[in-house]
Length: 123
Image 1: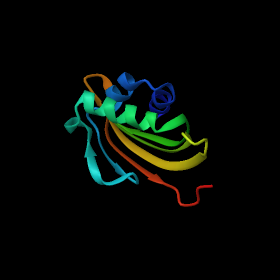
Image 2 (image 1 turned 90 degrees about the vertical axis):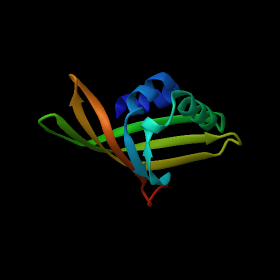
Image 3 (image 1 turned 90 degrees about the horizontal axis):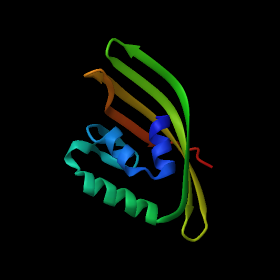
């Protein structure tokens, strides 16, 4: 998760795509499953580029709440905070609960499923 948050902070779309390109996710931004393998690299980067163009600044931070590894499967849970400065200078801080499932495939840990949802007690 730290690597993902770092890719967002650095606007490193190549690294972000590599992390998420084969995963399936769901959560607060969209109630439907999001199968990243159905999104081309160009579409992913265009969408992320449009997201960054809609704001002056983005900064994320991550707090790990726990990791559990059972064989070749890893479960991760935590919270990350997004601080978004809009084009008009307004600042929005959103806390997001996150969990993910990783599998060790061909000697590498790969993200296979993730969930995110915003916390309702956001400041």
